[in-house]
Image 1 (cartoon, one colour):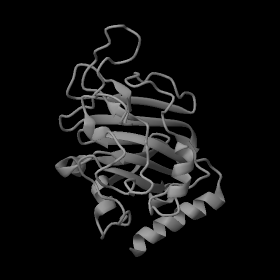
Image 2 (image 1 turned 135 degrees about the vertical axis):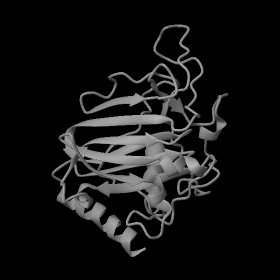
Image 3 (image 1 turned 60 degrees about the horizontal axis):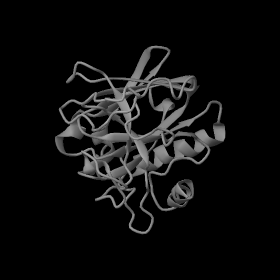
Length: 246
């Protein structure tokens, strides 16, 4: 049902991802499950938290089906953003957070009270892909206020830094990454169109993406377009041109 709703949403949300991309949606994770090697070898996920003596990434169930320390991460309904369309708001399910506590009394690898890091900056989520990808998109939940000003996506290939895209760029009409459907705020959920590698020094692919997290927030639905995929690249490139025209 969740997948069908997302496919339907592609027709009306400007930030919809290409259907042919590979999707990592983290719904196989339990609420609070600590990230280790669950998605390897295709995707290796690590992270940092400069605010704590530990670096823990975990799954967080954003669906409204139980108590939580952070209701701002739960929906639908969402308070805004391009995934909050009233007739077809997206149930994101389990997303990734940088954890602000390490409570695991049962020692089962699942946090007892998962909550996202609220201090600024929150840290980093580091994504390394086994196979290079020419485009990357994602969902962003509950990024707000001055937090997004220090949030960004960094792109790499073979250890070489290609470039960075700030979250502010998605709301800036003067940015080539502008998307008028993206509205950040408290309890908002947004889908970011795939960013194409050819935007950076004529590169043709990424093999690493780092999410620099400004503060309290969650991330889901990483869509990667496998290379080669000329038809899909054309679609993603068209989305990028549309951004520029806007």
